[in-house]
Length: 366
Image 1 (tube, rainbow, N blue to C red):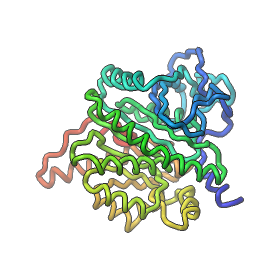
Image 2: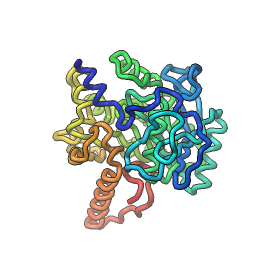
Image 3: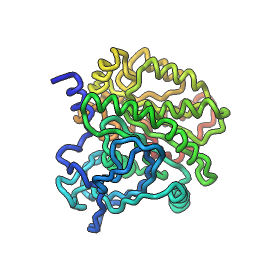
């Protein structure tokens, strides 16, 4: 088996095996008592899927952003952190994730839906999720629905999905990387668009793997043209980021103090990033070494909260998606850290910030 074949096995999303090759996003009319419905808004740089309307968007690059509104049904009995794909279509809502509605919308309807959702739920915050390598459009939709549901995110969920080919060939890896680069201006514009709404008070970002690269680039661009303290973007969570450690250091330095709070989730046993390191010339990847010294101390000194997820390895599964698969444990790690930090503030005679519900995956409830 080649190095890249091993990498592909390591990065394939948990639970995505034995699923339909297409058509998963075709809505079903079947309703089952006890299911949870998760509405998502989508912005994407992918082209629409002409040959398979049930996929909505494919892996090719579009010239402009497109938008969609999708509602996913989640079965009542399931393991937290798991995406239960239907073995065949149509799926069974009693045991599978299924699509309830899937509609293309224009930019005006997208923006209006964000405002309406914020008003209806009384959560004037937006959580933007940016997926990683080897994600089809439906992969990203169902994974984000799982994250929103299992974390009980008190925010308007917005998926930003870039043109990943969704397969595991080497040429697809390089295509995906360039597609992420291609999409950074679109992500930056999306953040600006959402943050400009007077009805939205905060924006939080959650990025996985290669998606952390495009997210960091978008934040770097914004930091260069905004005054310190003027931004609604409050936090960025980088999960298993597939980013060169030297590039990460340089970018953080370039952003300076004019950047949101950052949370870094790393696993020292992340085999996918270990092999990615080989592909990229032997330079460490942040998502594998970020929780190890000397990096951890260095990043903590720069106000980057580092979480080592390696101790969760006894749970099994892929280290690369551990933050999502074991989301309950990860949220507890962050809650414990928040309590320690508040305790330290009190000991120093400082007034700690009042705890409140958060929008991000790991800090949703303090």
